[in-house]
Length: 416
Image (tube, rainbow, N blue to C red):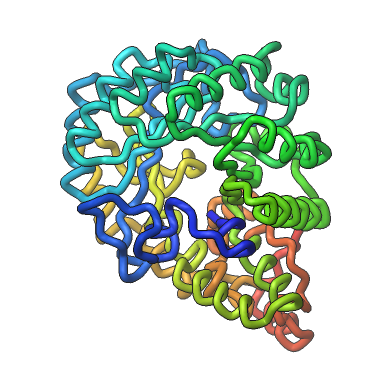
């Protein structure tokens, strides 16, 4: 995650303790601020069910009302939570499918809370009525992330069900009414980037306190909507617009935290923008970016996924690669397996990265960004991230370096 509010606008926000190793930035009593990003235990995204009441075009794991899975029983899930707590996982993000369609969700959330775990729900929001919001608060949910992909009909088109937007907004308001922390998750597409102005106006009108803009990863059903992938120029323009809107919000004393997710190039782009505006501030931001390390300490280090069949993945987009199954072995053992080749590679990626990423002068801040996107596009997890929108000149790739890449068969053709 790239915290635009923190990095570009210099506002401390919840989560900075884990993201940038800063004290008094949202940590709870008993939680230890990590001294190094490489030492973080992973936040676990748990796709607790495959059942879903919507038909989202860009679902990364192909969930739905008619999709089968070997979901863990309540007792099995509690055993997993025991292990996650013992392992020191800071947070469990209950996702799906639609997690609210799993009957024992709040029993599991209460159990996670009792083990000292932060419990987060990632939901489409359409099933949150007043009673559900109250139950979530009572059982100890620390945050509810509601997925939206535009205003009104645009959202409904992507979600596959008419009226999904209005029902999600109602769900957000039910959470706000009782003081339950709630925010938005949005995936950038060619359709909704036209709505960025309206989306930020929506944030203001609805007093949204947090919004995460995800870059599209073409896995699951999202692999079928290639026409919605942004070009590099469109991505650059969208990120710049998000930064500008965030700055405007902070100048009006709004407390909306804005983040971008799944493309660590955004951090470098933000740094380069600040370098022109305020070199001293840019230097401070560089320290935060390099402490975090971008992709260096993300997938396979600071983020993990358990899917609805119990399989563990380096993140929620690596569904085509299994590390092990929690029904057969504890998560902690799977995650610390010294003989797992992909995990070893992700944790030592400097030794494996190829192409322009290997020679990029900003590698310490970006870390090669999202390896799964490289694997999906180039069929090679160590190839450059095809979503990097910085030019060769910007990353310091001169003609001699380009010749070196050609000589070493590392000249991967980047999309535009």
